[in-house]
Length: 143
Ligand SMILES: [Zn+2]
Ligand SMILES: [Zn+2]
Image (cartoon, rainbow, N blue to C red; front, side, top):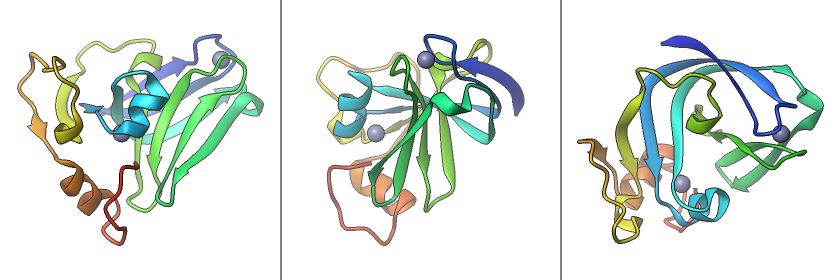
């Protein structure tokens, strides 16, 4: 784990996060709509807004997850699976991404054609993701 800083695109929201080295890539349809492609996140053990907390928006994206973003510029800041207690900070929002690399791909069965990664990673299907993040939920195209 390492303590890293990050910010949204416009810089109004800044944060400090204790992150691991594991970068995840998610292909679920909600991430596609949210991030215009894949959502790349980094497993995070603590997330504290340093400045601009009043600009941090939080949207509940499903019964079991919420997503943080900047209300000023719209940049994605994190995905939070509330039931599982799993928070994943937006990879691109980190100031320094040295040493971080893709380790896992979520919703691999929803990956658009031509989006294969060069990195060797663990892969999880939609059903495996739901079983992990929200075992009480029905299967559905949401994350
Ligand atoms: Zn912003
Ligand atoms: Zn997703």
